[in-house]
Image (tube, rainbow, N blue to C red; front, side, top):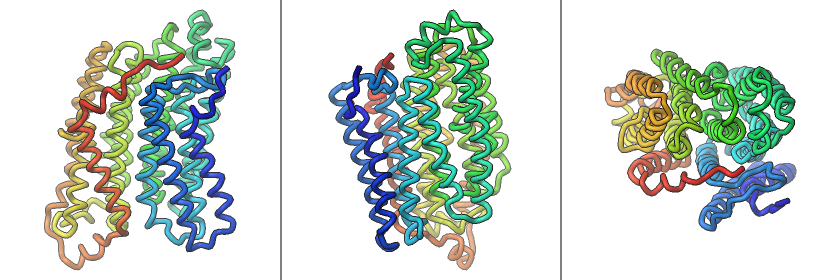
Length: 474
């Protein structure tokens, strides 16, 4: 039995920092609670360093009775989550500075980040559900952190949807355990092919329901627009980015490791869900006027493209690298767009961005890069990610899904241009002075960093793609 605690250093760093931050919050004066944010950033940096060391030394292993796997997917997921969490921490500085619960905010981010990392490496159904709970419950509190009416309503909707689909997921785990007499993926891989078809099918659908809730994919996407619109901008950035990384990598591992030999036609199910997510997300985004709701529906459509990699998890060798690279590119691009929204708290509608290119040219440039990046325009990272995902879908026998994805990508140009066009129109100086008031330097720095990373992933994709190659451990 391998009980190597060092293999879980990134997860341990986040959890330990959360505990220390919670203890420190009880005696730190309000003006000093920013030190918990520094502690959170230090924990993320520690996790990134440990992950880099693991990737250099090829320390692939399964630990604690094979319940957690440290392999290529885990390391790539850690890099994405910890890097994205650093960006979220940076863009949160102005929003929570001086708040009487500032320390608790950082603690909640650390806890939900640790839960996301647990989902990424979970090699056991019970470990997966534990990570799901740890990633979800602090996120509900973060959604209602501002304690205003929109945030409270959003938190309630988020919680109720999460409780319903979390219970459904737990029931699915029970069914898969009853069918396969195990919860470890390697054992389920052996026992599920001989289990009753109906039991496996219903159990899998129920587990996927919980993972779809985490990712915001159809038909479990109804919470996404309300939570994104009601929560503070940094929290909205978090819930539309990091849970997707955890849910999609966890789903890929489950399908690839535990269910390759079953008679259940889950590739077709995932293909249909991918088609529904990308199409519904795009259609709903067409006539949105709120920038946060537009980004919310955009992220639903992005999940559809990402689910294509899960549909061909066992049918294409390109699936894993396509999923991991696309997730990295999407994370920095989406966070860059939200960082601009955070930096301009008074600009809530598309028309409020009128004249931004003249009054805030740097932020306008970031928004141009990130929105065209989400569309999939070269040379951004999402372009290369989409190219990889579409290639994997064709290679896996779903050319029709790739064709639908291309059509949806072209259609999405409409609503991204609806946001970009006002940037270059003229606006009165008085109106611009009000709605283009900036929050501070931290959000702006986050926006520039994320946009640069998006471009760097696109330009240096040849160097980044090899990092996503490697087998998943059983």
